[in-house]
Length: 169
Image (cartoon, rainbow, N blue to C red):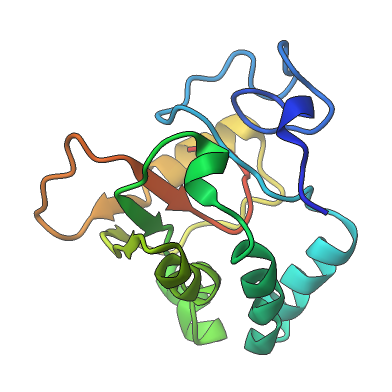
């Protein structure tokens, strides 16, 4: 079941919130809007768990079937120039053997006709964010990413894709 964007925060997509969001009301993001497609619970959470922790890459096909039905540009309201995946940490990649975001969105980007552009990289392993506060998460994650290719991204509409919205950083 997709989230109903008429009933989510206009900034972070928290369900059941519209204007004054208890999660993000005092946060400044570097993006215009987050579009979470699903609430991270129930069957969606179980599928992610199986993919991430049981290395069950075949389960990504569930997301392929769901996402190929979406007109992403219509959903977001603008033409998208690039889809940029958020990379896994090097240690997570070595442990899992793949980047979940790549596995889900690279095939979908072809169906959507939008270039899949791996321009981000991660510097080093970081602490798991699960037990950190929002502020600790923000500080930790802000040190992680860099653009690995010298490329002009100005005047581009970029859809940055990740598996779970945690901090918005």
